[in-house]
Amino acid sequence: MKQELVNKEIKFMNEDIGIIKDNSIIVSSDAYSIELILDKDSLTIEEGILTYNTQENFKQLLNKDEVLTNLIQEDFEKTYEEGSWIEWIKNWLMDHDCNIRLYDNTYNFEYSGNVYEFVEFDHPEKEEGVVVMWHLGEDVRTNYSYPEVWLGDFEEVLGLESISNHEEEIAYKLGYNGDWDKLVKDVISQFDE
Image (cartoon, rainbow, N blue to C red):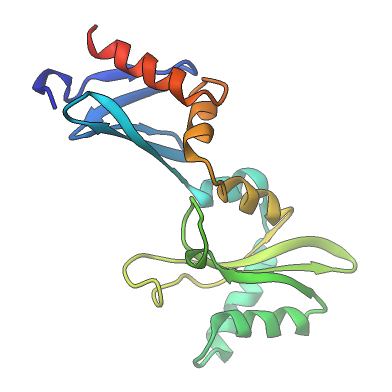
């Protein structure tokens, strides 16, 4: 990597600014971060990595139910002893007249957001939602937050962050209408400026 490119700003079509650090261009926003990995020798982009800030997307697309969150956290603290968190949450939801729709840990599938346990539910008289336990770092089998209840269309968040073509999605987010080659050409043209 040419030394004069380190810390150089790269401006994208959507007006986002990326900073060259080490062998990458880093672009950050509240809802996601993008890392464009640079090939040191040819000064082109090898790949793009898109990571969503799921907690921010939850805040934008869903509504946290503080009353139910407080209730489930109190019950969890009093009654959870050991075993599967998901099983405990499923039982808790069924005890509160909810139907279980989908449950898993995002670690188990290709996902571009934070790691968390989730149980999606619906209720015959209330809004659909999801109970999540956020992974707090280190070993993915341990270290999760207390459960939280979020209401709204959870599958919208899940679908947003379960993308298969990062390059195309990155090119959309940075203002290139999904055209990865156009994004790469624009970035490379700024190396000589």
